[in-house]
Length: 143
Image (cartoon, rainbow, N blue to C red):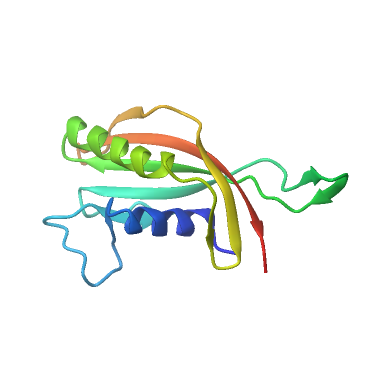
């Protein structure tokens, strides 16, 4: 099972929201980059997915305890203007809000729920604008 940030990064890349920064095809002059867990210094336009924990990993199903994880994650969008960053965070929301149940490898995601509206964090040390949005999901190992 991957970190939730890795799976969500793959969803965002597949939805053409951005390109994974480590991908050799990534062009920072024309694309939004996507990173996991550590926000890079460059490029200016980046979407970073952070795993943020979650409640205890179990659920009762049919009277028995089932190993279901409830991870949470945050999407942080950094851009050159507040409008650009806000527009991109809305694009991320559009991509993630449409997903129902899905599977990647041996992990089945039951759903993804947005747990906040976009949150403006102001500017970073390089005067770039930052917006975030938070999510929670339910997943289980199906191997």
